[in-house]
Length: 167
Image 1: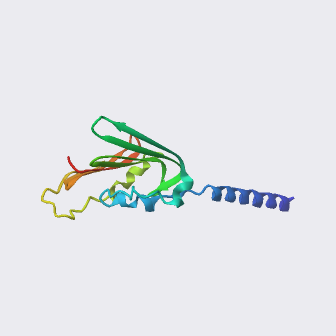
Image 2: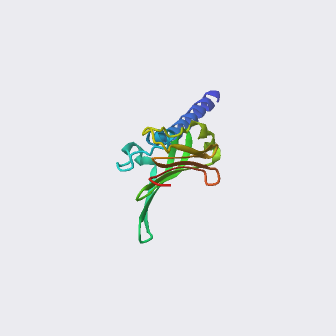
Image 3: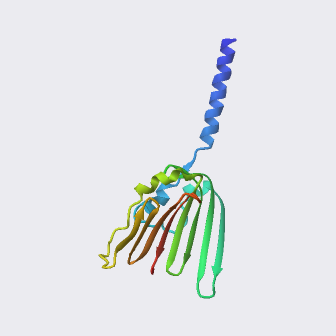
């Protein structure tokens, strides 16, 4: 009887291990890593690397126009993705002339612990107007050769990087 119980226990453990292996989250950190260095955006002109395609369960593209400019918004819904060690629900990329925004949506607010790891932009061009307007636990705003904004939002569980050519 003990050997039958032992065999059944081993079989159940094996099935659990197989089920967990089948649902291993895909870490998208390498793709989004540039955001941690001055809100540098990943190469959004290139296709998302194939190794991340399995976790993308939906893509919705929308265009908005006010008659003068066109805003293009693409939302990627995810299942089984992590970034920076936290589960990622979706991400959005929006752009229009002179402005771009990348926003990551997490499953809960635990990602707020990441804020100290996000660095300010570096004044590479020695811009005379380079100025840190804000830098706190919710993000930063830096002006110089344009405007770079990092926003941590615990209400919508998101991190957003926004780059604009003018203030």
